[in-house]
Length: 460
Image 1 (cartoon, rainbow, N blue to C red):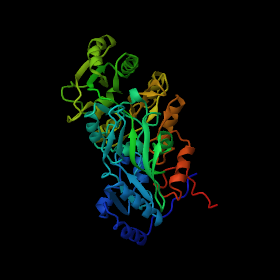
Image 2: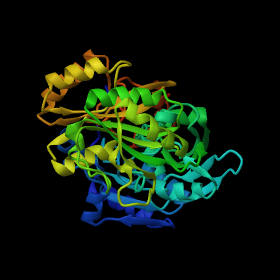
Image 3: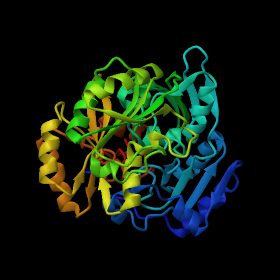
């Protein structure tokens, strides 16, 4: 059971801290109510449950450092004043990762955006945490490299926020998930202590910081592996129904082509998505693909025999108004909610043979559940992840649906909860808790988000 949350700092404590922070060069303080409200939010309103839980949660002060030295001095001052600190990237997360539960300070990383180095031989990049991924992609492209994984929000998401709060996305069909060994090669971290330390951790020591919601260290920079750049082609393929789409997705996963993205949408989802110009009216289920140029040419000839009709085929133009990658992953949920905010979503890994589960779930939850699937690689094997859309009808119905999915062998990653563990596999990661004891001994970083934290260790 996690430690009880302390009350928010008093107004007097915040004023004392603000006076100390005003002396720090390259640090901007934001205090207007509208700024505090905006910078205390993310996209947790995808979940009605989180919208209720986080109602009224707001920082008492926002600090925007322009250097790692300013971060170090800011963190030290917060620790000395016993004021909680929540680190914020671009606020594109959906779990309330950067929402402060007990006030205090939000650290806005947006000015920590330098690309420090790109190794010409290996492609390894070192980049500060606040760098927006679209800008990082531009710089990598100049060196013939690209990020391996990115969220559908890559145009606005920060790389530090993706590592701290994300798990996978576009590229997961080739590269798996962010916590798989080989992606995060190291990071720079500032500890939450009155004598805040700036540490450089190797890949093994960085692992407990990955996907920890900023609860066990302030990430200031990252070292990441990259991939050779490829000019992907966009394909939209239409098939008769979800069953045919499922069969085709499995055939594609086994084909000798390079895929960067493969999403499956049943008809009810397709009807509500803003397809790129040139796509005809929806007539069935659809697949959205990013494929290498050679594979694109092959698929043009191969797909008709598999029951697929190519309705869009073009080189990807990521700067365009409606790139195909912005129909996938959680952009699908965004578009559905724009059409009707009564929709929310789930996240899960489907069983190796998902067809029986999908068939039974569609029959049982008809009208309340629409399927959106993403092809991924999990521990080296091709699998399907589910990000189904569901009609919100309360916590009890949500729990019944999740239990139904589990009974068919699905692994649920619940997006309607606050803590790292409950949004993942539901178990406490002892390494994450140990890292919090080492780097945040008083428990001041993003309190309330790490269930395994039961409080500071007793003084010896």
